[in-house]
Length: 327
Image 1 (cartoon, rainbow, N blue to C red):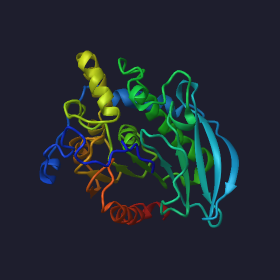
Image 2 (cartoon, helix red, strand yellow):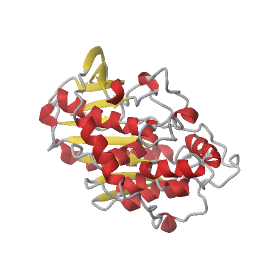
Image 3 (cartoon, rainbow, N blue to C red):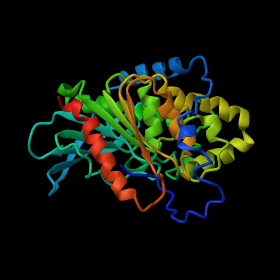
């Protein structure tokens, strides 16, 4: 999964502590903010509207990869008549037993991921509106500005559109492979982890999910913790528009959303992260009320000596966690 890395490897160059002084025990006790009373109704209404849209996928074959994948370009219709562009990977041999929607970080996506342990699956890699292949003239592809797009209006905020893009990605997979109903998973890293939590608060067609260093958790706390990347942009905007920004972000709190997720979720949360503050990541995990698993990363959005080993361990966990989808 593509990460929205800050491309910073000097641990001493932040001007703040990316662990924020939290121990693991303290991180596991971070709570969620008080939600707006109509939080669930807000998302349910949007979800029902999204379900009424025919995605009308268009597919173009690209190539057959040496590692055993057929690769396609695909586009589908999302809300606001946006065309969302993606990659679709199908195994060259064997039966497709399950499907995955795989999101990306705020760094966007330039190619599909080939390292995932799902050789019997249809893998859909959508680029959320305004980012990567799904560039739009009216939405900046720069994370600094993208994350602010219509942030003054809960109904128009770009993150809501991205959530709808995820719902329509699910519709697209089921349009192409209707027999995979009940056998779909979701994987989202950083930006896509937070978007995934918001989407799955009401989405019933995904059976299992993985969030990797997910963002947008506990927004009031997130606004107070110094960060780099898109979080810093929101913090700067918030300084001049506090009341309205907080009013909108209450509907876009991934920890609040996580309280409504009923499917099994695997989370990889970091104890050190300069771009997505760990307390916000753990707030999402802590809020999950049902079956859940936690993989503790030494760091997120940061290169560290044990990174490759931890990634291998994580891939093995994900292979086991998502195995039930193939049954």
